[in-house]
Amino acid sequence: MKRVDVARDFHNRLTNRNSLQGDGNYTAEAFRRKFLGFLDSDVAWSNSAPAIVLDFEGVVKIGPSFANEAFAYFTKYAKPDAVLRKILISNASSVQLMIIKEELNAGYFKLR
Picture 1: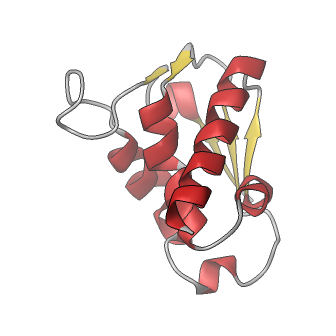
Picture 2: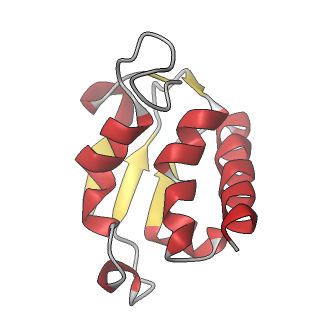
């Protein structure tokens, strides 16, 4: 299974949705393309096996817009709980995980 050290391999502050937000660097769009792009198809969601572990050790912040763009994007393929079974998140703080879950649920209900 693929494993990503998010702080080391990307950035320790996950706050920008796209190039128009904040300083426009280290965006959720870029993160999704780089690390989760292989999940952007119906076929990738045809089974429930975990596909990737995102290690949040060292991540100091994740913003709602980043979480929405990076993770809720996949609710077009699966329900929020299925997204978190496919994309495993380790070493996230309770607040970081709460933000991700909130955006997954908001994204899912907006799209349905």
